[in-house]
Length: 418
Ligand code: UD1
Image 1: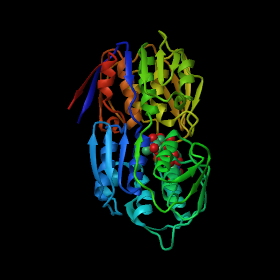
Image 2: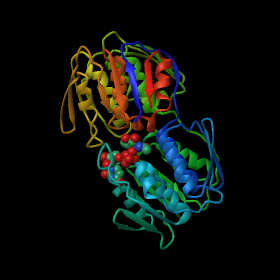
Image 3: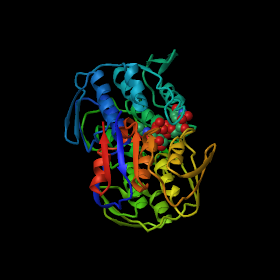
Image 4: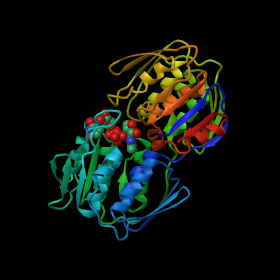
């Protein structure tokens, strides 16, 4: 299995162009199945999760073509309604195809995605939203058989939690339902706005994206268009953390700085100097990072759960004691035992982690437990004394494009071993 071998102790400097957002690209690619014709998606990152999405699109009958960071999806003659279990299991977020398939094929057969590394991840809110719009769902032995006995009808959908995926599925299906749908307590993430911008360009009538009430006037037809995916705020944050932990000075180009509004102040709290010029974020790190008082993960615009693991590595070598509370997923501290192997001092109790900063971390052989946990370990390797080997790279490859090459361009010493 592939691993990254990192020789720690090098200060990062230089500049990088931020990658396109994984969490925007996936629902937008699902949406290309809902719309008719040839969609051209620019700034589409090259990631294994995107590869899996392409496999699903092809399985449904779409033609796809990669041209650099552009992805062309032609849905003209596609009519599939089924996602094989193997693909559903490969990527949990394949569930976001449900709304798109139902909107196009008026029926769907998928399997429940099940739990994953970071927790149970139920899909009750997705199914609730589908049912409210008129979908009948038969659940048996992990399979979901969905049909639309009468027409899809606009309705009021009140989510008990602002789930990103459930909001996306509701938006996708409501876009082609008859009448008006109002989603109350919708997720407000920038990726929701990006999806709605894409759909609106295709002819949808969606307003309120980015707020907690989204109103959708259903339309009969959506026509394919061109769209450029927004910058990946989590990948951007990870590179800033890499600059911070190594005492570096780095600049990230092509970002949307306001999407990092909950992250940049935390970096400043650790003593980093942040400056923003148009879409470029520059970070200059202090010699020694300071502790973070108390950090709580929350739905957007709060601090993102996806940045929790990598920022914990910063607190592991910061001066003093930091507290991190994980509020979104129940099993998202799996990087902690691996950080302990590298000399970190972290105690966890339920959703709370207390981190006593140590003077140094030491290179060790560790295993990436999940996508963001993996990036946390790479950050630890960048600053550790000696050599760190991070195994189980399949997780990291799901979300970071060219991760080790980008870090090496910033002066890191990393080799990928196959
Ligand atoms: C998306 C992101 C993921 C991020 C997460 C939270 C994508 C592809 N993934 O995941 O990177 O960590 O948002 O910002 O965009 N829940 C339920 N029932 C449901 C749906 C969700 O109980 O039907 C719970 C989940 O178990 C979790 C919480 O709600 O505890 C948040 O999940 P959700 O916002 O749906 O995350 P995802 O869309 O899966």
